[in-house]
Every structure is written in C-alpha cells, then in structure tokens.
Amino acid sequence: YIRVDWFTPDALPVWGDGRLFILGDEGSIELRKYVDLARSETGNHLLLSNRTRVEHIDCRDAGLPYFPRLAADIRDRTETAAAQEHTFRTMEIAIRAQMKADARLRPGG
Image (cartoon, rainbow, N blue to C red; front, side, top):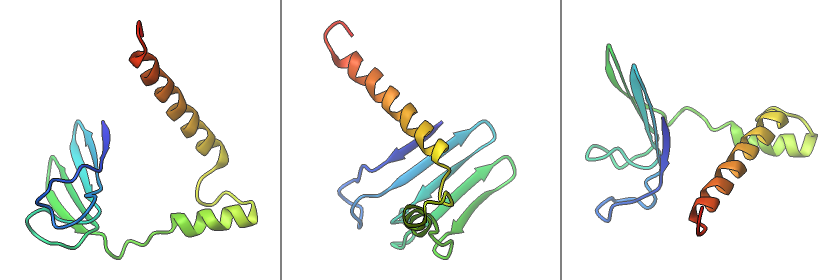
C-alpha cells in the first residue's frame, strides 16, 4: 500500500506537508518532506519501523539527483533519470486509473 498526501492541518508551521507512506506486512516507511511532527521544523525525515526496530533517519544530505538527470536526459537524449519505457508504462497506468475513476462518476458508472 502506498499513499502520497498533501493535506495540511491548520496548526502545522509549514505549507503543504508532503508525506509519503509505504506500508507492508513487515514494516512501514513514512517520509516527511517539510516537518517532523512535534519534534523539528526542519524537513527531509524518514521514519522506518519494522519487526526489529523503529528508526528516524535524517535525509537532509541524501541529495536530489533526479531533476538534474531528467534535464540532462532531455538535453542529451539519454535515459539516466528513468527509462523511457518505464515512464510510458507509468503514465499508461495512471491514465487508465483516471479513466476508471471518471467512469465511476458518470451516471450509471
């Protein structure tokens, strides 16, 4: 199960609390881009919990290689950020999901 969440409660000291949750049978990962709730107003936190540990990982120094690689891929016609086939397949899945959601909203859908 994976969910991306941009909802922001009024009391948070940041705008757009970008959160990513990955849940599985043996653990979970929570990424907080802008704030560590009730602990720190800095961002880039990874909270990991599994069968053996609960850990807070500071990701401020992790680096963000995707966007420079994407710009280079566009300029140089390479595939270092993501393979073109992967990108096309991802978009195909997203479009199919959107079409199914839209069909359910139509009368009789």
